[in-house]
Image 1 (cartoon, rainbow, N blue to C red):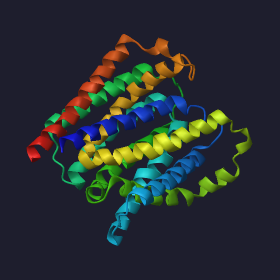
Image 2 (tube, rainbow, N blue to C red):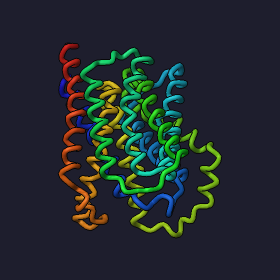
Image 3 (tube, helix red, strand yellow):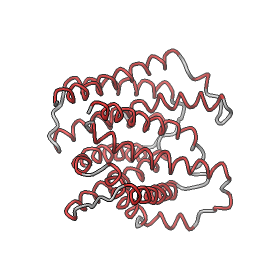
Image 4 (cartoon, rainbow, N blue to C red):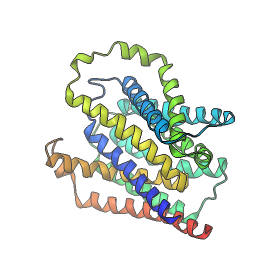
Length: 309
């Protein structure tokens, strides 16, 4: 139904809004208090427990044994590889490089969707993806101030983008078969298992000094676990159920806009440093370019949905 499609687009927009806010709210947690691997462990364990709690209360859905391997693959690429390479890559690379490499994800999804699930490469949708990528790259270049960068860090971020793109594509058959909550619960269960058996995780966890973690840092960690992990992955699965992987990934382009928006709002209420002087007419124009790209990409799904009736 069209109503489900509209809610799916709202869900995808909320996902990237939560991600955008996290860049401001969670700043300073890593590596001052937690290493990337320990932070990821908290995210995976916390989100998995929440998914199982909600699933056991709301959904009594059985999963076929033959689908377990695909769930494990989704957990590997969508949770373990995705998060490990992103956090460790972000520590080594610059914010500019991270933003640019992030824009490759929707393009990778278009290509992988064509080869794996035989999704046709629609000219209008591809044009929207490229327009969004252009706006996101220009906005990132105009906003970046970090000077540190690393070839290894960039490689990690590239692997992260490719891993998440592959996850969005291979999870589509599962989301067509099961409820979003069931899919993400099993995906995170496998992802958490892979993260826990990753050798540096427990070693760094045991060496973490939890006495220095303040109450405001705890709230930031909870926001990342509940908002940026539990809610975002669940909403992404809902969006993916009613749209294509290409449309779902195109909303990534709204993240730079969300970052600037929350930097302004949170500085006004005293929860972050004042970044208002960084908002310029040039950046507003780039934001509009991004939204045009997302609109073109997402409007294709509404047309396809109408034609399918």
